[in-house]
Image (cartoon, rainbow, N blue to C red):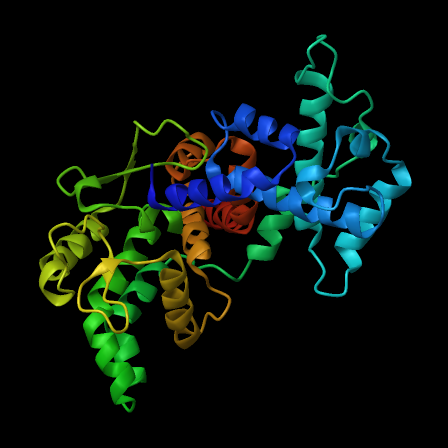
Length: 362
């Protein structure tokens, strides 16, 4: 099991005993098919919903664990509307439309299981009335809309190489007056450039980069082995190819990994850092990589650029030279619907290419 999944599984195991018995049963039912990370989000959504039920006096339960099936069975449509309103207008921070949609989907999954799949001792559904079946959850993520939001916020064409080069050299010139920042940069520039290079030449997710071990790397064949999102077979790692440029960057970083970061032999992580106050190199965290990319992006003049947008940058560049099915496989998408974003992102580029073709032939 990869690092993040192990952490989330532990958190899931800690939270589940505080849920009603039927939620625990639902989690057990879903565990073979969904990742611990997804199920942990489910449980957090149920915590919030049950807490709201108690605050609104819609149950006599004093704790979330005491919520009953009858409490769910007797909910009215106005209660569901009220909860949705609470999610969008609550004073301690509103949720985006996407977050609200996800939270409502979590509830629908639970109610569907209780009313259509789970049975009592007499083979009747556990939930006799499913109020969530009446709730329409509109699809928020449309590929064309996502593409529109990404326009101008990713790296295009020569910028991919320029950004890696900036991390490797350019950033140092911009901060040469700050001795402390310059020292940290000199220590980490090869590693940081290598991480950006790997994402921009393979399209890996940041979680996949964090979980990489040295043994997952096959430099000769230009590939890494990763646990892909949505694949719960813990015995299988998917081979993901990267471009030639990353081979050189990775080879260079590997010559520094053990000595510069004082990495002990027991540490398997590919990308390491020495945490403040410590003496040995340890696996870099997801948050550290995200913060690192944002730091360089601001100085590079792309303040909207994030580590996930590096993945989008690769995908857009890759899609221009390959079809949607190859792009889907390279990125590890569950369906081509997600990959359609890059078809819309490249619309402008494709139309410009057609114009050049026409003008050149006339």
